[in-house]
Amino acid sequence: MPTQAYTELCHLKRDAAMLSSVGALLGWDQETYMPEGGTAARAEQKAVIAGLLHDRHTSPRVGELLAACESDKGVQADPEAAANVREMRRDYDRETKLPKDLVTELANVGARAQDAWKDARKRSDFKAFAPWLEKMMALTRRKAECYGAPKGGELYDALLDEYEPDARAAEIEAVFNPLRDRLSTLVADLLDNGKTPDLAPRRIHAPQAAQHAFGLKVVEQMGFDLSKGRLDITTHPFCEGLAPGDTRLTTRYDEHYFMAALYGTMHEAGHGLYEQGLPKQGGDGEPTAIFGTPLSEARSLGIHESQSRGWENFVGRGRAFWAWAKPVADGFFGAEFKKFDAEAVYRASNVVERSFIRVEADEATYNLHVMLRFGLERAMIAGDLAIKDLPGAWNERFERMMGVKVPDDARGCLQDVHWSFGLIGYFPTYTLGNLYAAQFFEAIRAETRDLDDRIARGDMGAVLKWTREHIHRHGRRFTSAELCEKATGKPLSPEPLMRHLEGKLRPVYGV
Ligand code: ZN
Image 1: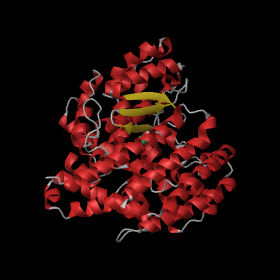
Image 2 (image 1 turned 120 degrees about the vertical axis):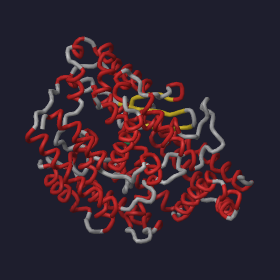
Image 3 (image 1 turned 60 degrees about the horizontal axis):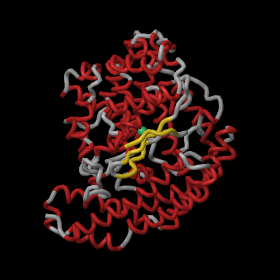
């Protein structure tokens, strides 16, 4: 039975999570409705909250309560409480390893480096950004040294651990390398020997209001509860699991490319369904007693991304989805769209391109973009790649992998925001998410044999039910590896993703 120490610990965590959700609201508002003039004050507001949170998470009282729970037989005999304490210990040990001055310096330099990046990217001027990247890389390496490389691992693993606990770069590399070759071969075969689908269905003119209404219809059909969430417009789409009962989705619209918004919205709604399914909230959205503790939180970024990519690619880019969605979209987009059949729209949603920009990449090339970044950031942290040599290394590797020359740094090493504010060790979780998604969907299909018939009728409940049961409700109770084994009966493997891509794209391209 949980003891007084455990109850007090959960209470402290819940209290800190409430404070954190205030900070999240400030962040969401900044990305959606805040006027530009509010930037400086908002940065200070967020810094004040971050400081308060650091104090709460690292308070000696938390340390005392953790020690009490660890030696308490009652807590240890309760599997949920024991898992919760294990994860809280993990968080506490990591947070207390970082000195407060490093935390604030990272936030401060990161905010300014991000500003410098925006400007440098606009002008495609790597030289202007290089000194900032140099600073951020040095600070991030210092952070990794504070954490310390895990036993038998490398310094980069200490950073990776923040986003995908217990993952190791060497193990990821062992999965990524053969996958890269197979993906490159598939892409070359499709593009050199296959027939590209007609792009016309995705180029129709679709007014923003019609796209927004269609997007809301789709997320409702997915099972996203709009009485406990919203969909708003932003420049860089994201999902914020802001608070219990309050999950915010964002998207952006291009009137001549509705699929960008549609798949962006489905992606964020996939993240949103995970947030709505976590046991941080009750049926009415009220915060639960475990809100703020690891049992109520998302497992990892890789698992989070499996939920978004699953809905986006395994449902949204499927033939069955368009059987349902095509007549619905006709009602919103009118005559210009009506003239295409569902099959043509399905094919247009599966076009593969050798493009330069990761966020616009298709399902087959996407992981190649991720692997490039993983290799480069790992080399930078290890000290094997100097900042000044980054553009050259990027361009050379990109051309070798994709067969096309990078025209400028804006479409090369300056395109992503992540490195500017110290998100290093983050990129590989995108591909891990794709691998998990493929494996989860094989399990969903094995359990629901008529999944496609159901989706074609607009019934997507089987997907939501499976993910709620096997992923969402567990929070951080199990590790990612355990979660995968429990849910699918097998350890994570690249085979389901390759089966999915080969099985879908070869027929579309006729090769
Ligand atoms: Zn995502």
